[in-house]
Image 1 (tube, rainbow, N blue to C red):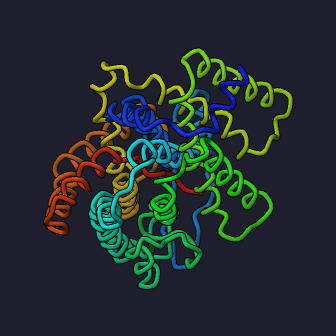
Image 2: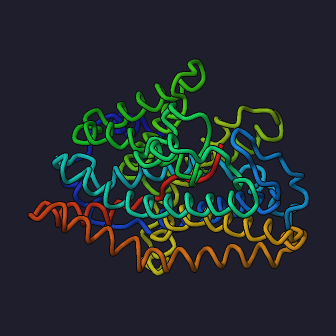
Length: 396
């Protein structure tokens, strides 16, 4: 890479360049990527259909033999590593938030009301749904499904979006929301940094991402926050690179990253999973960001829009199915069929589309108009719509 280009990576974007990049609007390639990541999570959580034993408080599910899952020989990367989608979602969030807010000064009211309206209504609805379903499970079959810490204390943590802030004993209620709770403090940090995040070009995103990496590797305190910060600000850096680099450079860097990952997989099979993820996710997100504005891709925008609904509804539905099967003492052999897996994925995509159209988006719009009756409401609503980022999904 020419020295002049390297130097340019540590100089800020011109206001004209930033405005031109933001004028693109939604990056359809990123929308599709986050939708695919959500489907991977739905497939990874398919294992819970084989968890037949209701749990008392303090009990945990037992690992299953994953080879019984349908099409394991083909889908084993998803069945074994589907939880990686959490980090991918965090990186995508960094790209989307940077695209919307970097270099801008917006009011705290506008920013946080947009976040609240985007995330909280559906979280609250699914939290209440899971609490009711788990109570029904305990009444009908004498135990909870999948997770057993469904008490008042953990309900309050979930209610406050603090289910994985280090105050919990373990996962609880709508389990996948743990990763959203981790991301919320990173949103707050980004708000204060966003106006000058590229004042030195790529420097500050690199410093923050490296700080997260260092904490994650050498410190154990709040490691989930460190991991989230690392991936989120890597995403910020990727957006910046896509504004600075030419297409052939993006392709060359991405190809080099994929080649390095392939070599490490072959030569050093036990490479730390965290670092391997970076080699996979960075080029994928970069390619989807740089080339993701191709207009035909916009037809699949709905796929990305429905990601949050897909993420929050699939776990309650698993609990419902498991409760019904446990109550009727039905065997789980049918779930080993590829037809069952396909039906599960299609069902969840349909549910997520309905939820987004008739629950998630209407509530988001209504709350913004109710909370902020001023021109700020319009800016908040626009920012929230543009930043309808995929929240991370998956369990540890």
